Amino acid sequence: MTNRVLSELEGVCLGLLAKRGPCTTYLVRQELKAAPSSHWQASTGSVYPLLARLEAAGLIATTSDKGDGRGRKLLRITSTGKTALKKWVLAGFGPDLISSVTDPVRSRTFFLDVLSAAQQTTYLDKLEKEMERYVEKTKTHLKTISKQEDKCGYLGALGAVKTAEARLQWLRVVQKEIIQ
Amino acid sequence: MTNRVLSELEGVCLGLLAKRGPCTTYLVRQELKAAPSSHWQASTGSVYPLLARLEAAGLIATTSDKGDGRGRKLLRITSTGKTALKKWVLAGFGPDLISSVTDPVRSRTFFLDVLSAAQQTTYLDKLEKEMERYVEKTKTHLKTISKQEDKCGYLGALGAVKTAEARLQWLRVVQKEIIQ
DNA sequence: CGATGCATGTAAGCTGTTACATGATTGC
DNA sequence: GCAATCATGTAACAGCTTACATGCATCG
Image 1 (spheres, rainbow over the protein chains, first blue to last red):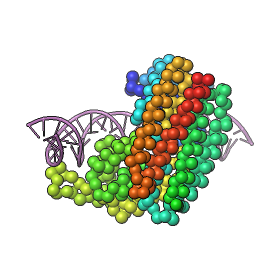
Image 2 (image 1 turned 90 degrees about the horizontal axis):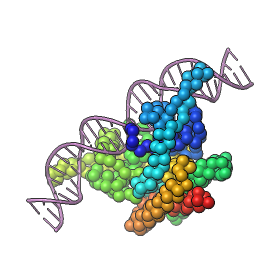
Image 3 (image 1 turned 120 degrees about the vertical axis):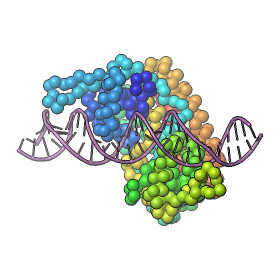
Image 4 (image 1 turned 180 degrees about the vertical axis):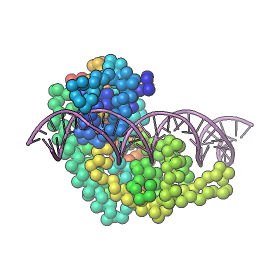
């Protein structure tokens, strides 16, 4: 692990920790869950071992909260961790990484013709409604972030909105083209 | 495996097979690699076992090409497979799926402030150039697809272009906001 | 004193990656 | 004849998901 570049989830977790300041693993996980983009979803079975891994590598230090009977542990990023985080951010380019945007909806569009015409329109209508809801969700989330206090968080959330809007517009083109 | 909904990669592979007609595992993998979005990238170690799995489940049938010394096997989708494919496409909605668009660039934006101002601008400039290249790549790919012959393939590729363009526009906003 | 939330983790199983390993075919 | 491509796979390892398991804290 030492000296290899962090994975996506590792980078995000470490980044959240850096942003938040000292907090528990549980809280990191809650933050991941609260994000409107569910790719930041992470189960206990991945977050706990992940942060334990980062601790073993010296990127995170822990202090056990003796006042808490639950054996609560506070995590904080170390200076080594901060260096690794910087490295991870700076490694965020290259054709492979840029193109690795997965979209299950788009994937299915390629094979829409296996459905009957009626199924296609029903499916696309349902999808449109859900996409509209999702756009609203990202917009609502954006409003909760202060542009002054957390500019980067704001810009990231703005990206979610812009991408969602583009997908919705595209979906409407698909509908028009499919129905003729 | 039987009766569970296909995973993303399983659906895509089965869909490609349905679209292509009978072909080898090797060819399916080449098609995955040729796609401009690298999330359709799949190593031998995943594609071969995956298609073997689908065959075991009866979604794919194979015929060994006896005239070929390499032990070439031709795969084709079965009627059970076609039903599973339809089910996979129709299952392609729901908040979790719609929001599961992963974007490593956007993820890193949230933590851009760990970099120095100089590092930020250098990074964003590099990113902009690569994003421009990627937009061009998706556009070029779109041109290779006949809208008449493969409408769904065209619309899928169009989605890649539109999403890429939206991401580039957003990235320029980020640049402007970060540099002030 | 009971429900909900906070808090920690483990175990089995599946999927995917990287690297290795092999050999035939085709075109120059 | 040689290189590139076609073609098939396996093995070790890492990571993630689901499900399980436990127990304290806090608020009503």
